[in-house]
Amino acid sequence: MKQPELGDYIANLRKEQGLTQEELVERCNINVRTIQRIEAGDVTPRNYTIKNILQALGSSYAEITQELHNKPKTEKTPENLLKNPKNGLWVAIVGMAYVLTSIPLTIIDLSLNMFNDAIVTSDSRFLIAALYCILATVFYLGLSFNLKFKTPMLKIFSILYIMVVVFSEILFMDIYNTNVSGAISPTIIGMTMIISVIFSISIGLLSIPFFQNKDRFSRPYKYLGYLLIIAAAFNLTVLLFPIGSLLVTVFEIMMVIYFIQNHKAFANEPTMA
Image (cartoon, rainbow, N blue to C red; front, side, top):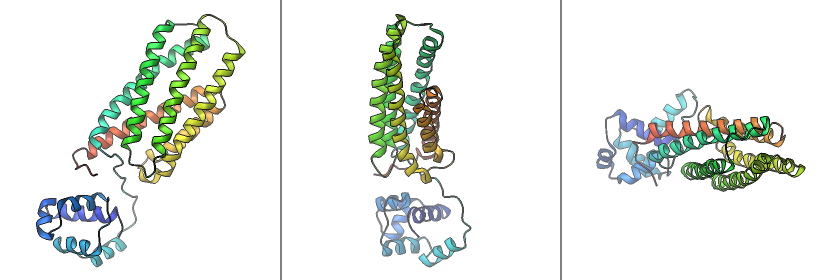
């Protein structure tokens, strides 16, 4: 039996017997930190360590191997992918504020682009866009640094996505100011197309780590990578950019829900290094 199945089995067996980790330590003379790391699946213990723990719990390696062999296959229990579930709530709160801030910003831009109606001044839009960029930065950094992915790709591509968001808002601000003055030019159309393509590339890259780790998520979160790649495809068409942006918002809402759920499920467990 390999990790994390071994750690789950030991933790469940200990709880069935009503033992705390400290009480198990007294029985097998293994320090509590080691017990915690084994149960969390962070380390694969040596054979004699497994033997001592199982003997203390009245079991044996042969017994759990036979039990695993006889047990019908079920869907793998989803992992706790948060480094510190207690921080999950804060990331979710920032994410909710970020998504809510994007709504008026989208309405402002659509109102001008589709109906030629500037419902706010350039200064007001600038303030909303500045808040939007700050919240986007905090949310995506919090997301990428709190998820326990096996490679640093999520951190790298999240930082790249943040840079694209900020760069795009700078261009959108210039476009907004120009549109308010009524001077729409081929340059503005070209800038809009460039923004759409850049967004598409950054979203496509962001989908890669979610594809790599999809089997570690439960449904529906294992499909986050597919959601992002579809959003990237819509953005690449330029004309369907609003649909792509909507799908990215759906991804962000799902991540907010995921962080809240994991905070509730795992916040009271000991944090592992």
